[in-house]
Image 1: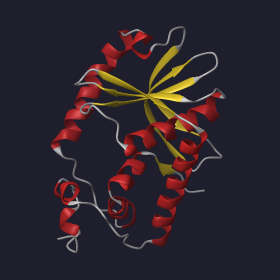
Image 2: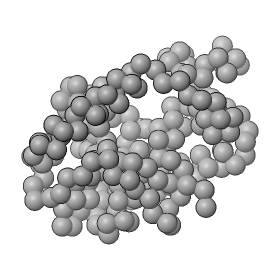
Image 3: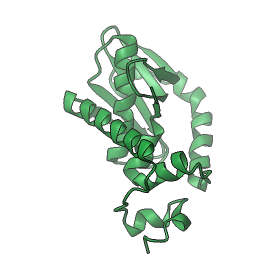
Length: 191
């Protein structure tokens, strides 16, 4: 069974062609400066994050883990979750972003995918996760229901079908997205 890396959910929701260029054509991605900035920030914050209490998430009496590898045999996606809070009964994934104030659909889907995996692995309930925007010091709780979990699986299946088809997908991306895309020069039909 093909297992999709969760980061491709975010790429797909940005523009399906990004997945096509990465997975079908194997075009190497050149990361923009803000990606490196985020990676560096993640590393510097790891030590600080460990010392913080769980009060930031309104949770106590739980374990806090960072950079958790998640994969489950019955699910066709996998990834590394930025952080997990594990209580006696529940699991709470955390997606850490450097910039932002309001979670995007792609960020929420990525968070939910990690939560679905963690729910299966740890056999605990998952109905709440967090997206933490570090530069603005804002943590946004994301309530999760069964429909949202089903939407993640539906999106994963769409991406896998796109990869299997090996056909260039349609893109409805707008100018704002296209001008910041690493693959702009491959989409000469867009402009």
